[in-house]
Image 1 (cartoon, helix red, strand yellow):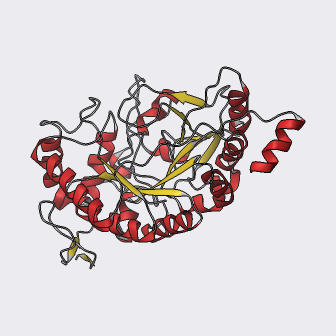
Image 2 (cartoon, rainbow, N blue to C red):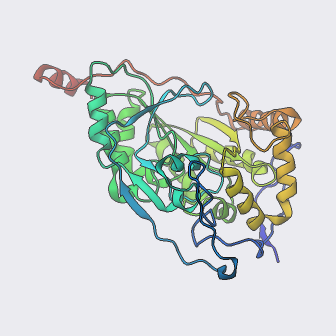
Image 3 (tube, helix red, strand yellow):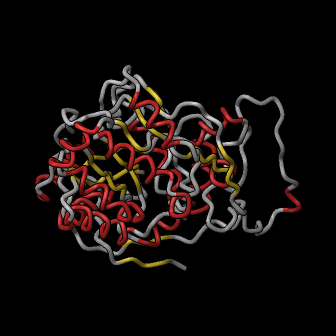
Length: 383
């Protein structure tokens, strides 16, 4: 039995928007199932630990629903730095560690191993929250040592994952950034970002904010399997429309592209985002660092058993015969003929949609440290 979707489909080497029927095979019953709403089906061994736990195969079956636990973080700083030349920012804020979205492909999963957890179900269900994030951010920005620059939110996990609706840690950080007029880049898969349009629109008037909405496909059935606890693709397009209507610079992040799974959807994603008001677009190829490879391969065997070999062959063609490469400049885009075809298709889609591939720079010229009656009065004249 197959699930039929009438969304546009086209082989990667051809021009986009050819109508066809996309056949989605049912999950493979021989692979251990994941708990409901989760991407991983277990906890791979932490690479820093000597021992591991393996469930009894005779007890396998439909696993019970796994509850999420939220654990307070005791960090004394909130801004992280990196020296990666291919990610577009040097500093970031992560209000949360771990992510409830459950994307099996998430490159950030191994970061949970530094905390003593697994990159599998632990990453999805043991969420580290930072209730003091806004206060720590204010401490950092008020310091004379701080030189204004773009902060990304987040560099690792989604700042608008489900628990943010209740905790509002990300909103607290945005309030601080707006007060200090420090520019911020937001990357998210969730419609919840529209809750903060009041702050984002205010910052946009001074070119202080840019939002990238990640959309992997327009097919809700496919995204449910890829990203079980994210906003539906239609809601993400609605978020682009709402942000653009409010004057916020917003674009679409078609990522990750998984050859043989969602790469054919990229032109339709870019076209829909452009129609909704997006002004720029970007993409990355699937990355499989450390234990992400094991988690993704199990997910692939479970959800798309008939496509497994095709997907792996294409990934190897992008990675010089390997499933993953970590070299700067190659890890995001891939190389070889297949990489060139994807870049070509992305360029065609952007030109047709009228989207820029690289947005302009955000401004740091408006940065200020609030305080003092005179400054407060002058600020009231320009806000």
